[in-house]
Image (cartoon, rainbow, N blue to C red; front, side, top):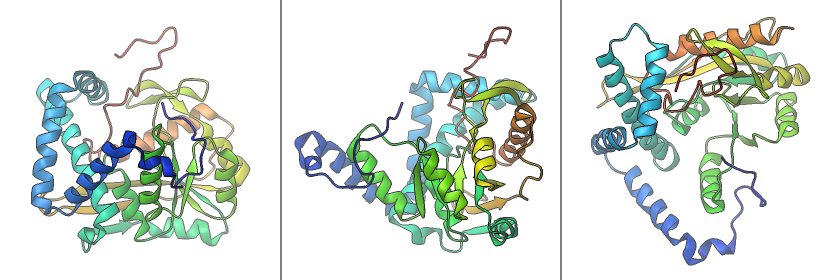
Length: 311
């Protein structure tokens, strides 16, 4: 689990030049080289690495397979295996897409579109901040880059344990996001929303019932976070569902940003009803491109008494 760093995010430290960090510096140079490779090579490498990860990362593979089994009961066992494998491939493709967003953004030229931008603009015209309810997409920061082509946004992030990695990722993301808000900095997040900013927030992971309630996700009870309700009540922000995905021929992919109408009467006085509503939105979006989601996370790990274990 990531922990809050005891240094200024993005700040360089002379200690980063010590031998203990040399391996990371070498790795970063290697990643920069990968980012300038032709896309034909990138997606072939992604397929190779993704298939290898699917074969050897047994725990993650089992989690992804089980998630797909319970969320898509209409799929055959063969379809579940095929799609679980594709999740790992899409994750690796997403890493290359993120590297391109960081180091070679011109690659995305003429490859992206947006739908529903008026919903965000309407909320901001009213002087309200916008909480962009998104998901943990395999596109990673490539999705943030796509959004940045149409509107400025901030992101809620979890600091890396390694301070050098945290600095490097923070600086790369600074080219995409107008603001990066530590997930523990609730005051900072509320301040940005009160100032009319749009902040990408993903309420789609299991953090237990201390931070959420049980609500169906693809028909299966899941611990669902409710922190965004408090944020919105305090900041008076609007909630605009956000989704981005890739489609078309992998040799010439196209990217789409989808913004849906702001949720009306949200949050309500019923936190379970609100959790159900958000989960239904996420479900609908994920069905557009099911394998472009991080299904290897244990979405159903919290099982109170009376609930059947999933894993």
